[in-house]
Length: 265
Image: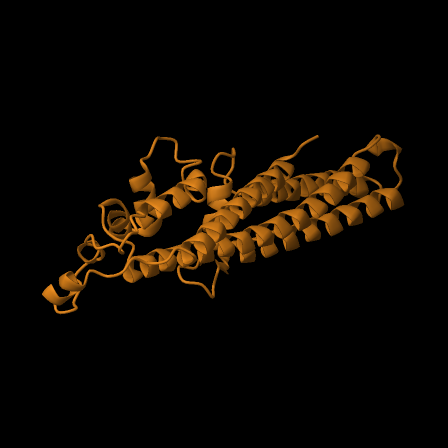
């Protein structure tokens, strides 16, 4: 039987695979963009502004190299469409133009610089690579956080499976057929199971309160990652939910056993 903990494990694995594919796409885009040479600057335009460039868009005035008509910004856009865009728009639920997607990933300024007919200058290239590095760092951080969540869920499932087995064995048969010693041992097994569940809950709460990507810009609570992962679940915190429910079952069974133990004294 598939439990909510098993579903959580499947969800984490699915998201980890998606993040891995996104990270690979970002790295591919970054590698290809680095290999695209910049256009020669428009000398007259640079003199007119005394070398000061207010924005990315104003610097990218048409200049071009002699005999070279390659639109390198168009090349960058195509590479973006082939690599990052499919992963960026996979789960947004609505259509989005390429310009909108570039803006969402790299800021409005970069999107304008790449789509308004300007040149592929060094500052535009630097801006694109800087934004790409940020997305790569975020994806890498998410991969690390998902691996931590995967391990946390895996450990939780081990405990849940063991406790479920104990509950099934303890409730098997009729209480009237058990002697005092057997009832006492079953009560002790339930106490051990309950302690394991409490330890699991404490560990899980610590994990939820930790800051993911603590050494990266924009670090956030692991709790926010969990809320994102299980947003479509019946409960937001499936591991906490199933562990809490099993804790209650252990206590209920223990009360029943204690009632039988007192009758045999």
